Length: 172
Length: 191
Image 1 (cartoon, chains in turn orange, yellow):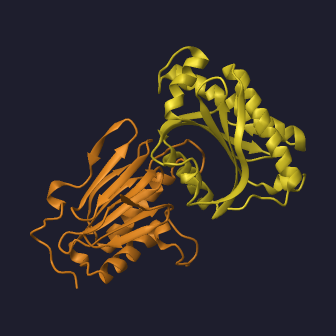
Image 2: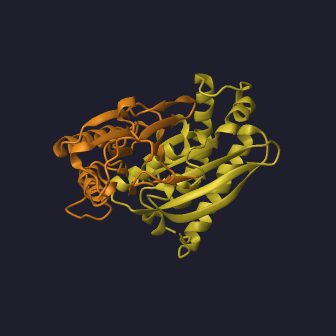
């Protein structure tokens, strides 16, 4: 049982329920924000670096809107900005097609820039290359992992950033 | 999404082109193939990655980018379990991700894609110029989502997709052809 997050979609929640998954990340970015103290987390399946005009429709479809939007959502669940960290995966170059070839790289750069602007540390990233990825997030343990075709599973989250069941502030 | 039913003549011509592609496929693998589940439908950016079922399924994708009078992407996809048997059928080698096999699979894209595109070009009096094929072995969702991203970049939340499956009557085998035209209205105006 998993919760699938499709293109442009997002999830925000407390440390409970099934694992979240972003299948088949090619040039898209799978972004995870996690609060190591309240264990509130959020994830977005980002499609493009920037959105059109000033529209706020589909905020998690675009890198330049996803990060502030997710932070706002996490705050509603009790997340504290100062204890939130980020992880991301994707941004691959699946095809050498003009216009498409560098979109993955641009997506990754846009997410990095947004995280920097918001002061959120990026603690792990697996981006670029030319292979697709599936990103899994366990909202209870705080562990993200990556699977690929024909390759061993990789744990993205450094050990010291896993959720500590002893240290969990009550989300207000 | 409902089929694009208001252009009956266009759909008839596209169906004929898909049948032409199937005939070319049959000749290439020397066994009878038939198109199945052919459709001309509008898809959203979010729907495309799921088009062939589980996004995590390994596939081989053969991509042609099409230029000139008709533009767009033509993608032939072979589910992972059928790649080895197809390679064996084509060149007598059962090996995934080998240069020789990739070359043979690229030729599948060339032959099948060209049969489809030439049929359309002939019917409408258009010129088409496909690029050499790119062969990629990866998960279905990663290939399809990248084409969905291109549509999103172009500002298309919904776009037409021409799709069909090929099933063989002689050997256990299936493959899919998807065409994402850059501008279907070029054909709509001529049908």
